[in-house]
Length: 206
Image (tube, rainbow, N blue to C red; front, side, top):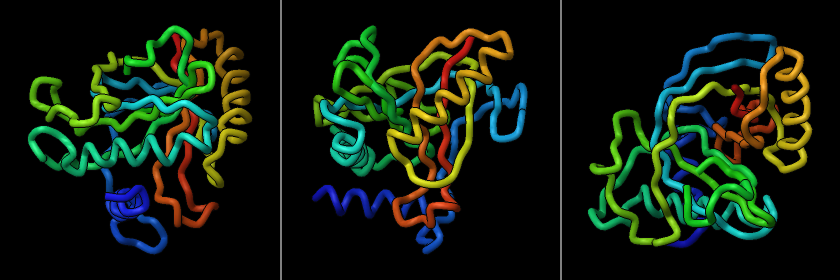
């Protein structure tokens, strides 16, 4: 399956075949602890992700990482099992503290980014099919508190950086401590009209 075919199939799943990009994918459960306009503090429970690391810039790595993970949930696994698509797709610069083989969200290590797909609610590492691609890893992410800022428009590294700065300033004004780098969270397929897109930046906090 080519990268374009994978992207198109996953976009259809996320969009529910809507020209406007209507969302139908399930999201991880969370509780809103505080809300201030486009900013929220959320408490997420434990979740399992499938992730992959790709070296290069944000824009260069997105397609390859997405294709690799989409292949896994479309049946490129030992059980040839399809896994339901969830939203958002997470992407962040790989932290220097995270091994390249460790656990998508997209994050950065040097000049590399990690992308993560959140597995459906109720998944376990034991029950999930084993990826055929060794570059796809699975891991459990413990429950955590997350600062989130929501915006519409283009999903880009520049927007990730700008909104992360705004969110960080807000978090620090609340007296909270930042515990992670920013993650880009994307909820919509590529064809969604930019002003209708739901994008978020997530930062773990104390």
